[in-house]
Image 1 (tube, rainbow, N blue to C red):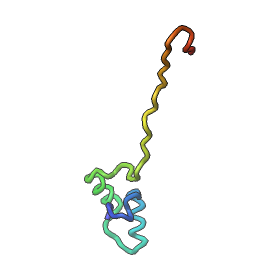
Image 2 (image 1 turned 180 degrees about the vertical axis):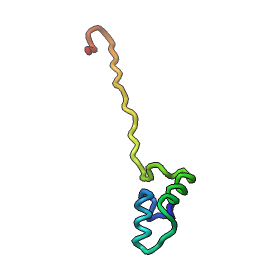
Image 3 (image 1 turned 60 degrees about the vertical axis):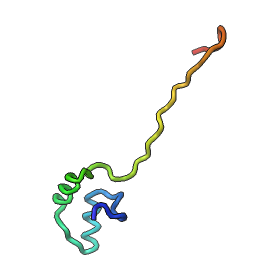
Image 4 (image 1 turned 90 degrees about the horizontal axis):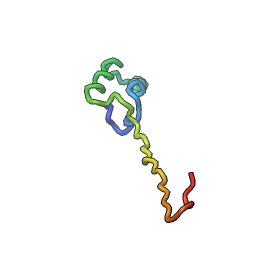
Length: 69
């Protein structure tokens, strides 16, 4: 239920509320959190963007007075 396609990006409390709205009571919220923690899914469940590391510019000089900082 937690790993289904419709619940993949939702927090545990949102999954619990959605299941209650649908008329399904599987367990309490604390039990859902306990199950998610045991499965290692108690962190952020959304796919987060990862940014590439910033590259520091490297200045090269071929002669005198070409690079100023």
